[in-house]
Length: 449
Image 1: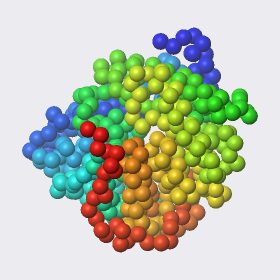
Image 2 (image 1 turned 135 degrees about the vertical axis):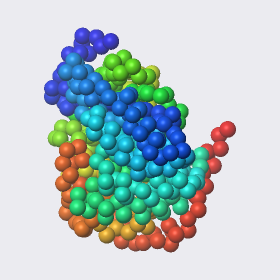
Image 3 (image 1 turned 30 degrees about the vertical axis):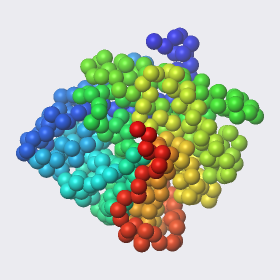
Image 4 (image 1 turned 120 degrees about the vertical axis):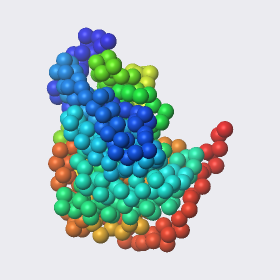
């Protein structure tokens, strides 16, 4: 339980520092929905989501009112659809069932229209990937992910090349909505099974039948704490962030445990990630600038982000025995007002962002590029990011939006997606590199058994 002083501190963090619980995500296993009839499978998927998550939104609203802590999103993640449809097919039917169920129970998003192809790609997994343009165009709340690499397996370059083509097709399929479909797809290296954040959430095969994973936030709280120690050395900065992360995580732990009891689920994890929003005062970029950078993207940005990421993890794992998911600091461009401004002033490029992803929670996130960017260039960006994840044994990801019809300026999505400035990619081609295909072998340090 929270002590009285912790409760008072939490109230202040909510009132003036934008503290919130970014998401309660219920993970649901769908293995018992498998059948050799696609219509039956889809109906079982729909029924189980309704049965398990029917009160998820209501529970989130009750807890938010009870504790005075905003709970921004209520979400569901399910077993990767490529597993569920392997026997009877019916990818489109499963996606429609997921979308219909999400709307019925009133949640924000449902994740798990996913395939894990880091070492090889079966025919049914390829069919799921090929269905992505139509599925992400015709559904509203379904999110998808594809894992194309792992430290143990290396990088599946055939899957990487295919994902470049698929992202271009999704961009065109949703061009009437500013290519928004691409925002609902993540391409991973080392994807985790208990991630509560969209668009990459899925309930992995090692998870329980019904679990609660909570994703916390709080960049504004960390920023306020650093403002109180202006001029202090980095040891003091790290210690301050660590203590602040502890407080934030305690709030997440409380909400998670209460949700578990109310929903009769199993406790999964608390994801310690600092997830920004486009609101002023809720920016990870501003934290880095408070450390002394004139602008995020300046030399020193990677070191500052490394400190932040590590201190958040150290503080969080003292507050909960079950930290998981991605845990650290997110740097999505369109969702962080400081990142947006840094791109607009020319301080932050894709190349610098790529360097920063080597030390942050995920990777190149909510990056908008010109609508005429080639599939091979997008695939090469994915390959670069996957290489960082594979070599460093960490999760990395790419959520990139080639905005159809746009070559410059910015695109406004609103809400948590914010404003995406069009970022420049290299003018030099990677076509022949991507055409090689095959698999980039796992690094030597993957042989640990």
